[in-house]
Length: 224
Length: 224
DNA sequence: GTCTGTTTAAAACATACGTTTGACCGGCTA
DNA sequence: TAGCCGGTCAAACGTATGTTTTAAACAGAC
Image 1 (cartoon, rainbow over the protein chains, first blue to last red):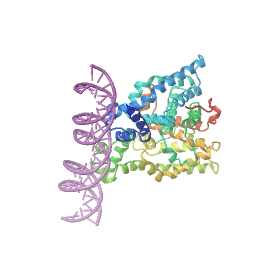
Image 2 (cartoon, each protein chain N blue to C red; image 1 turned 90 degrees about the vertical axis):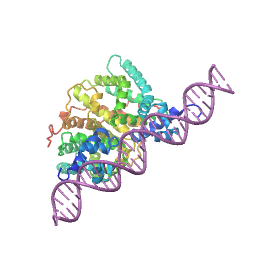
Image 3 (tube, chains in turn blue, green, yellow, purple; image 1 turned 135 degrees about the horizontal axis):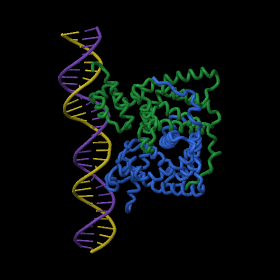
């Protein structure tokens, strides 16, 4: 290992292990032995385990947020004043994700899983890091969603965005677990593109559902 | 503390701490000091930390699965041969959850969060435990879903069920985190019943969305 | 009163963790 | 050649974890 691919080998190993097992459940010793580097290398190159986690996210998120920004530019230009539709906005997002240059075949799914973990696993430092570094494209996406669903009240839209985030983050973060639990015996495809192709219509339909109270059979369920 | 509310105090503290911080991030010392019991009490009463985790789930899940089973009995009896609709099935589930006697006001949301963690956090022992103990009501729910959506292919239904689970578990588990991220400045209601009233129509609409390929603007997104 | 199951207290156990240290190597410049 | 310096390495550091052990109290049942 002539000079230093050490940093990349650490990042690769960490990315995969984090995705498989979560952050707290992955030790530096697992990472360094998978990457075949010395234990001290992590602290030497990154400073701390938390900083390594940030670096794993930054390596993916920085180019992605640039790609996404371009996709939104292009979309808004194409719509020429008119606000993009919900479907267009969602597809711009997923296509940006899918089109990202991958290090390996599992690239996107690993990163989706990591994003899901970032939400679910309550790592305060990570949330703070992501908010500081990547709030801009996130806010832009939120604004597009708002403009694409003017018929929704603020509260309805707020909750439905939560539902969308949930379905997405959770599905992506479930890795192999859900497949086992659902006792899925059918040979199910696993590429992120195909999952996304199924997810987007689901989300779009949910976002545009008729108002809650028109469908609910029991308006005010009683509680004990 | 005359005889033994020790067990319950441990369960209460563990439940809340697990929901707040996850399993690995919660130590027995945190639990016993919050519960104001001796450290050794956990291993005395439960045997191990993993067994404590199981007990936390069992305390909630056992009565819930009984309630749910009854609700499904009642629903199927009411439908008299015809398979219940999707909306009916979803409402039977949410009403069972909402109707469960609560230990405190945060009861359901804490448990939803725990269920979400059980999926995301890859604790092998937990998944095994849940599968062994509670596969029956889960399978029944799956069967009802299948009968209520005969128009879906197995694969479509499989993924959409994942999306539903995701939206539900994630939303219920988000507690305060998402509210911060979404910078929600509107005074948003927080009772689980009201969230459910918004969630169910979202899910039902998503489940019954038109097939993916009919909506997708890019049939086969290219990958590098 | 005695026995049995709980509970507390305090301490120690072995293990795993993130982090730090100091020696060492190899190529670079001066 | 000498000196430096980024990088690597084995080893150790301090701390926290889950678990176990010892002892002593305390309660209720027989």
